[in-house]
Image (tube, rainbow, N blue to C red; front, side, top):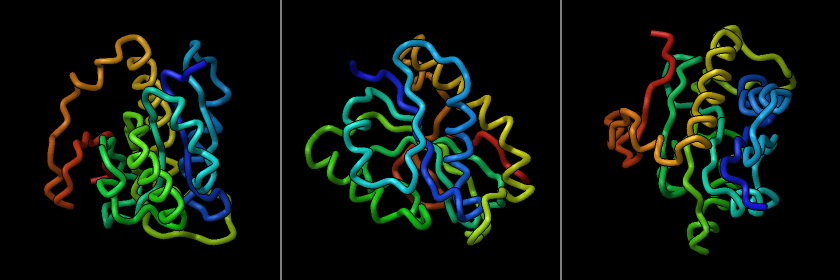
Length: 183
């Protein structure tokens, strides 16, 4: 059965804030979801995720980014191609980008929304999140859940969101919508 909405948390849970996507996916997986929603801990990405992405109409991805914004800043991006993802998707950058490039080449790229969570650094050998990232977790969980449910109820919902077509800070051609900012 085709997945309407795949919620995919990626990152390395053993590297502190870099694993925020995994923390989100694991908490969302404990909640009840309507048919057609799949919540997945995607780990550090890679080609083992290809089948899940190919079988989804829409993907909500949650990942940490080293983007020089204050830690705990959350943006919902709508990249259309692998090259439009933020430049610093930390330690799993190569595997995830390769996967997305492969899907693009095959013409099987689903519509992707990325919750980019700004972090200060990658901490090794800790499963704990920093205070800045831990603080935004409840509102991030709520926003991801509400957004996923809205996509299930009305697949055109995303197009009604106030998303700016150009991110002036990075010069990228993806839309973004600031969810939370620490400033």
